[in-house]
Picture 1 (cartoon, rainbow, N blue to C red):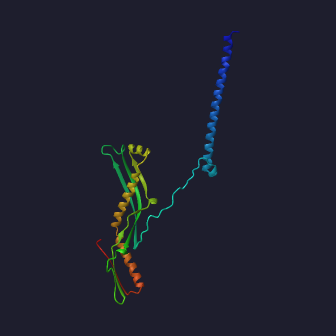
Picture 2: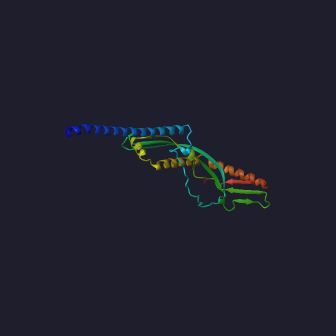
Picture 3: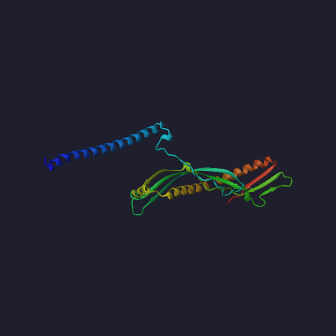
Length: 236
């Protein structure tokens, strides 16, 4: 037997060992992957059926509130009577189009439902000199009130929402990489502006004037005045 014959017999045995070792490693890796998948599926099933305790859930989330203390910035004394409140709802239909592109390519239309309230009040601190006149025997009193005013719109974020939206291809790509937070702010601002205009035209100030007048008449009558005259300014 020559040296070359020995080498031909030994070489096939080494090749078989290498192939067996590779197959063993591949099988071990597949078993590991299968075990991980099985664990994930089991955890998901137990979590969905509420059978897995929270402290045993490796995918559970924990919320930590690291908010700092509330700081009091200022205190303002009020001398006014909240006489009426109006609740309003508006559907904002906002559309943005490109000049030379169709809406399907670049454009956006959003329907936003805004719910908010506007308060009407009478500021007693703005009573002019001589705004309250009492006769000598204190049986009659005359009160001249300033005109009721409207507070800025108080938009309710819990009940204001985007009802529907249509976006072009470019807009969808932009939203995928990060939407523009100014869009949401613009919807809230526009809804508040429209509600404020509606409140000015709704007769809310007139209702506040009447409610304040009635309140003062009842209160002054209870104080013993026999004749009570309350008037509100107009044209302001």
